[in-house]
Image 1 (cartoon, rainbow, N blue to C red):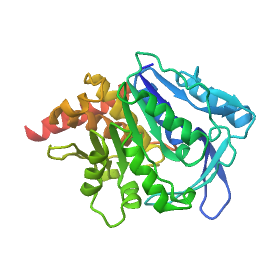
Image 2: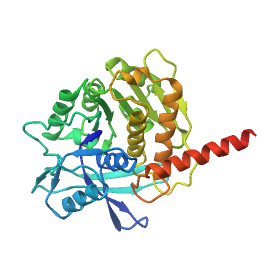
Image 3: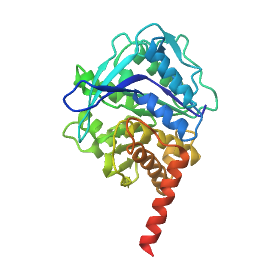
Image 4: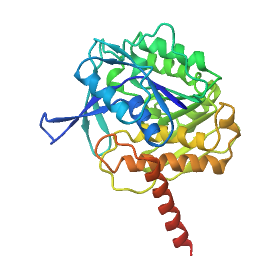
Length: 322
């Protein structure tokens, strides 16, 4: 296991025809999507959560195993599975979550699991941080691994689940301080720091302790900030978008997979990586996310598909210059 993720695993029910109550179920949850994406992109990946023994939990366990995600750290519970209902709009997605007392929200391992020495990245974030006991134990797990592994934080803000946004923003500031790499969408940034320029929020993250901050802007690409360095921006590949569910999760996975490919295994190496290498890392992540968007639901690409897309883009760029 080179990459570990912790957090929720749920069933996404996506709306069918507008105006109806027809929904189609998909395995999902931001951390689960990211775990599957990391595994499909070729890195040994493990998932730490608690799954229900109900029919949805069995489906989630089978899905993870089918995608070669290490499930040896997963606990089981008779509590129900988390369910999410998603209504797609042309610009974004609207969510309704059913999480109270669910298996993943009540994850509380004692003692904390010990990650194997070869694990170099630990991801946390999303709605798993909104309910105890899981939120507290996830923070404990991150604290226990801080400095020993590259900690990646993706808040994946879901305002429909947040009853006190001001209090939540204060908690997020603490989570920024626990992370080495922070990945935000522009929507996350607008919710966490309304009216504040994105570069100011990135500066706050860096001041809190993060070594690198990346903000994605959908089809407009992504920008990296590091302390004392100029921002680095990459464009997003142009694709015919079918669905944006899981795009951000796939981008986050692509970052860790590509950083490992560039030899990054310790937190301090995030600041040592040069601009050109970071551009390659973000281009890889953006291409993986774009390919995910060409299919229905969260359906991350394989490593071979991403390499083929990058090669095609490079060939096109060379032809246009000649």
